[in-house]
Picture 1 (cartoon, helix red, strand yellow):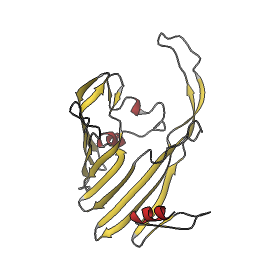
Picture 2 (tube, rainbow, N blue to C red):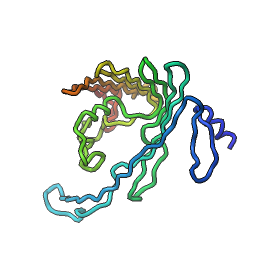
Picture 3 (tube, rainbow, N blue to C red):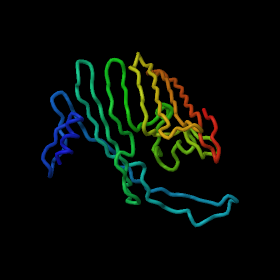
Picture 4 (spheres, rainbow, N blue to C red):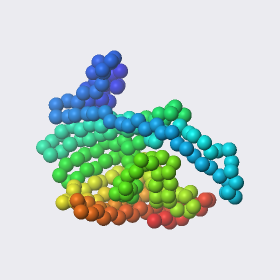
Length: 231
């Protein structure tokens, strides 16, 4: 328990009593809040074999469209400088599998007039360009655009990535324009491979229109049994 208290203080938090209504409370100048969504869905699936003949996989299913639970907060460190943190987890509302702590966007960082710097697990800038596409009721479902977005080699390799062990910078918003840079080193790098990842995006968003672009480079992307350059 003493170690837990020390860890909380390192994040600028103070432990409070356990029991009903217990939680975390920031020190002066800080704030924390809970967020999440519950998204069970009943889906009708029509499945056929490759040759067009029916199979026994069609029918109704109860599935989960990415239910999440998270906590985020900030702490004023100096004039115009905030420390920020987030822990976001995913769970299956239909009970098919257990959730995993910090399986989604989870980070610590700094935010100020220079922009935002985050260290941890986070959607790459390339993946985040998807937000400019029209949102639909099937987001995060079987029919969602991620089935084809950012994929190559017949879908075996995906750039639709929530990247662990990454450093990401988000610029300030200059009258609708902003850019993002993400970098993830290869922690298992050796003389034969370097799978570091660089991800970039830039966007201009106004009331009248928006325009965006994304780029991602993976120097040694494994495709099958070989390592190939992929962009």
